[in-house]
Image: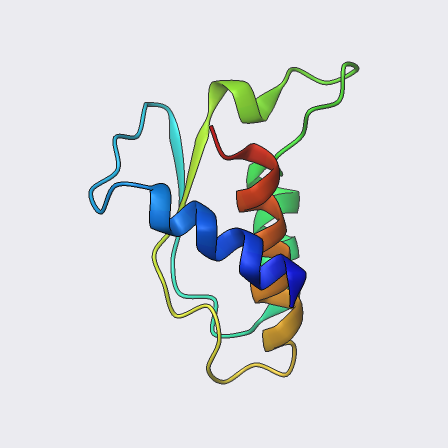
Length: 91
């Protein structure tokens, strides 16, 4: 519940229309498919703030187009991971 409360505060402060910078990684509908999200991150690169890797999160924005939950068996895992990333990397 704490995670949901905190991410709600972020969404309330954020503009309805976001300015995003290029390059950007765009992900389509996830529908609760956690394995697909991990496969996307594996193939296209995951947000990473490790000093050993070029800091991807500083040079790329990520845009998730919606339908985070719906048909998959891991809906909760998908939305919690995305909420966690939002909190960690929110400007």
